[in-house]
Image (cartoon, rainbow, N blue to C red; front, side):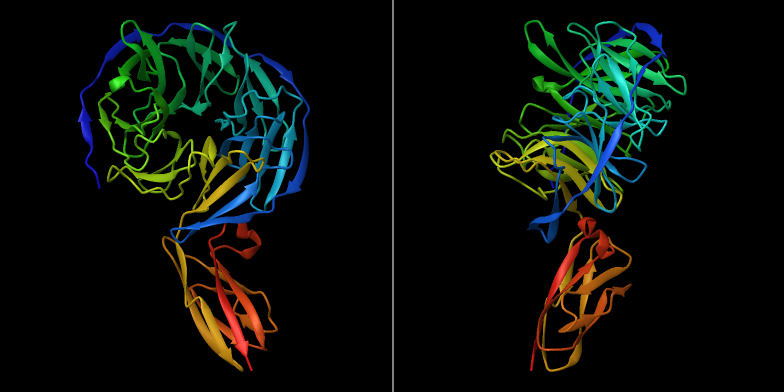
Length: 449
């Protein structure tokens, strides 16, 4: 679609990271409670033949943040107004886990650790919760005056890594298991976001003030063997946003200047500017990324523009979902559902309807989408869906008018007229009891005497 422009290496700084302290003391364990409710999903919009399903985030939700899909199969997220975390199960049940912790701390930075617990920054601590709401604890950081910052990640070494910051300095912290020993290392240029690099190192983004230049953005490689850092300056004073390691062996970094900049960074630090004309120079920038299947990355802007980036072709798709700057604000978290769908958090502007959106990534069509009978008889329709191979399910809204076979492996369904009137046949790629995470289509049925 558009060719990539190669950029020279803008800057290279090497620094040795000092290391301090170690802490394995569990400073507090707090009992938790859990309450449950049911989310009622709604079809929000149609676009490109595809559907967005909306979940109201939770009855007491303010701003959902930090959405992830954990190994227990649930989607977990925090809330800026709640003292706890929410989770959505595969049957649509939302659980709210309360800890009595301070509000507005760490809920936008949730991650699953190597021990299969959930971890998040908690002021001068790193916090832990279990999938059932148990096992809540917090662990004090080894350096006084520092607070945990970035979303934790699991490094190539199997340890939990996260950033710490004071008013004047940034550190990179490493927690080992099972003894929860924390060691931190000085790093230059901040640590806004972390990624496990395909080269076996930790990569981070940050910025610093350069005399005579101003604020300058950097991508930093932290060698986990030597504990040294190498900083690569982004061109044109671009400040970095988020960073991700991809299956093609490279890293990808978004700019946060509002011009839609996006860079491929090789493990040696060479940078390539990737054009993204659909969001360029519109005050939009990518704030969240998640790997999908094959060579795709899914990206989300602060205005809820959802796109894919193909690392094989080095090209962005047109926006699959796009909003004006006045009607949608993303809270910066996106998760690949494992069900073929993409989940992300949304805060509509001037609305209290904070929500979790599910983008159904496969395009589904039915042919024909309406059947008319005169008297009795049987007719067929066919459903097809890109990228899907499995069982389709169907259900009639009025079996006194028409019936349909409930499942089909081929996508072909037979409809039999049973009486005068109208009915709707709903067909889905998932058992209709889980329709909130299904691609669904409808066929209108009319039976006349």
